[in-house]
Amino acid sequence: MRPSSIVMLAVALVLGISAAVLSKIWLQAQVSQPQVAKSAPTVDMGTVVIAAKSLRFGNRLAERSLREVEWPSKAIPEGAFQKINDIVNGKDRRVVLSAIEENEPVLGWKITGPGQRASLSALIGDGMKAVTIRVNDVLGVAGFVLPGEHVDILLTRTETIEAGDKQPIQKNTFTDVLLQNVRVLAVDQLADDRTEEPAPAKAVTIEVNTRQGQKLALASSVGQLALALRSAGSTKDEAARRIALGDLNSATSASAVSGSSVMVTVTREITRSDYSVPRGSQSSGS
Image (cartoon, rainbow, N blue to C red; front, side, top):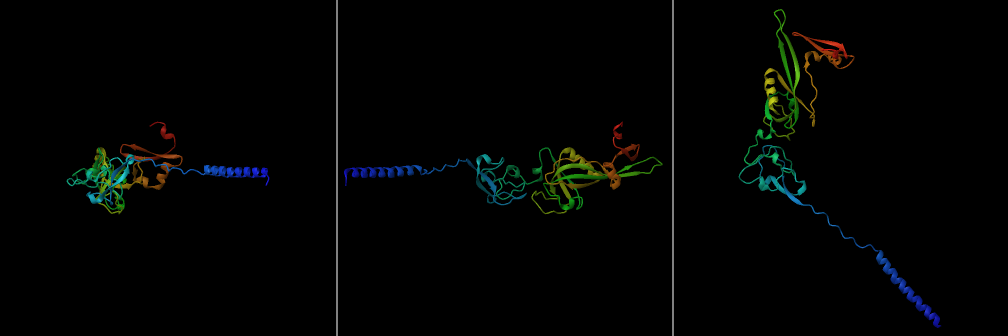
């Protein structure tokens, strides 16, 4: 073999080996390096006492009905307890005031203080009073009013007007909305706000302020009280007017709210009369 051929073969061999080595290095460089797993952000944890089973009004708290669980420190509810010993110390008992479901945090306002009883007074808000009114299975909304719900209170009474010697005695029966959006504390002796079983009641205890309590005491002596159950979440007071016997006539009621005339009342001494007048005319003078 000629020397020139040997030189060319050697050069080709060197170039081939070099290309193979460079290709291997390039391929290795293209392989993605394994990514280091990022550590999750640390969360400060604390402990919260939760109910180990469902608890109802009047239940006495014990260690077996509670347990401690980890809870993010920044999400601990206000009024929660961190240790079971903070609730149950073996000396003073605590009793449930408001229903607590299983795995729900035990909050301070849902239980009594150390040694206190589960009395109705513990459920009354600041500045409020508890007043009981007598109802029956009809006036109590057939037993569907339960503790924790809100009702309106209606008063129906008859007003007697004594006329002169030659005038007959007149009676007027009407219904007023006495109070709106009052909270029911108890029905008979039941104060569990998680009960779901309707039951006819003879007495309903409601939460009112002092003035409302005075109204109820007076109203119960002059007429008949009835409850109107409000829809869940309804808190807005509605405009209400007195309904008298004359308003039971559907034709009269319709003319009072629609059409080109409105109903106005004119009282002369002891006689009340209703007149239908064109709209707009009642604003010209009084």
